[in-house]
Length: 317
Ligand code: XMP
Image 1 (cartoon, helix red, strand yellow):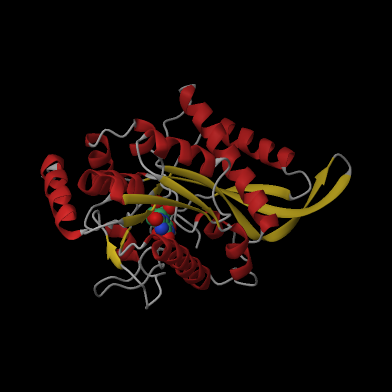
Image 2 (cartoon, protein in one colour; image 1 turned 60 degrees about the vertical axis):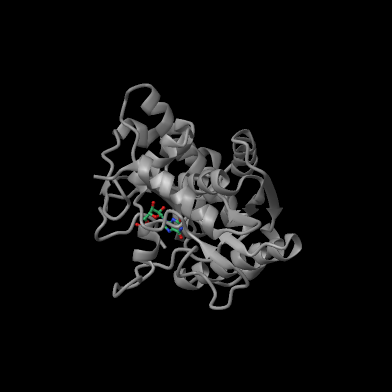
């Protein structure tokens, strides 16, 4: 049986022993990195600096909202606008593993620059067990390189600290709750480190980001509204994906040759396996109508993904 109190006590003790001086944490505002930040903050207090990198692949208003939320939790937050650097490095990249590697490496380089400026030797990450298992840890096959594990470059200028490395998502949520995080954080749906870049199949450029960001926001809003109205229960994860193909459509009597957006929603416990969510057709229809109206010139078709994991992973890349 997982003993959260004991885990917290031992983790804080170990972190205070191990981290001498200052540390930075790469924080996204998700449950994993925020829980890791609170644990380390308990251990070393003001010596922890939280770095929120705006990769250009975050969801609508996510950077502003997360900065406010983390500051409210008493953490010291530094936002770094690295949008242009990420877009530039990902130009022409279409292979999923190549994209993940580029993002993982650039994340580290950005943190190294902060660390060098602030004379920091320790870099904290909110890595959890599925991240390294799926990245090919132990003798396992590499399913995908999670940005914080398989996406890391070989040469790194600081020591990596991962206090949640052996935990699964459901256990991290319990720890987050015990540490006093509000439910909107410890119950938050997962969002991958590489962000919208792995929800845009093909080149993740500013134009495609605009489409994926708006479509993701609509999926989230419509599903959350339906949950509030008791039309359905909240899926474990729900989002939109921009597919790399175009289809013919029609608006009024005008031809549209636009992109296809897939709606993905799954039920899961730890992300290692998942079943697609049986979303009511009315909700799916509202999502489809809103996406094709809001993105009239860009999107001509919306499809719903009915694949479980396995065989499909939750994210498309
Ligand atoms: P997959 O797509 O492998 O995802 O079924 C399982 C869970 O992990 C999330 N995910 C990531 N989380 N960094 C993360 O922090 C990553 O690189 C990453 N890739 C996938 C995914 O959203 C799902 O919840």
